Length: 160
Image 1 (cartoon, rainbow, N blue to C red):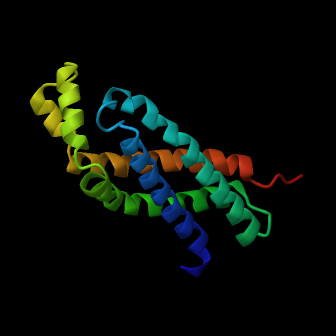
Image 2: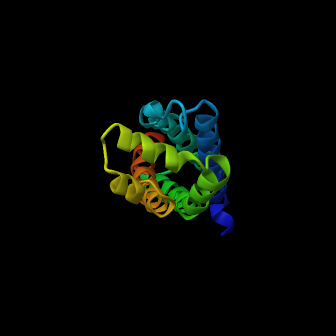
Image 3: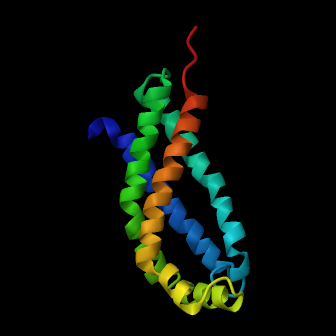
């Protein structure tokens, strides 16, 4: 456990930054009056998400591996960060949808139906807390894995 404190800390930091991002989306109206732009602007979270993985793996390399980190070590560290994010994602979704933006589901359901993207029943089935918890678990696992592999590749120590 002690040797993985860096990964645990950065997984928690990632989750807190994600909640901050969602709160900012709420504040600027992307969960209400400007909901039609939500799907576009929420993708910008990839920038801080990747930055967090870069900072985390740089710190892991410098502090825990004395500046020499293999690609495999970087991947393992990134996957441990991802595991922390995956474990915390249901709590983050619950906090987001009950505390930060409880009106989000009603707004997005209404928008999807009004724009004829879905029927009312389809929107209700898709835009709800259990569905978003599952989506966040799968999304965090996939995106965290891909990000870990790529960032670890660029931060690995080059040996002659």
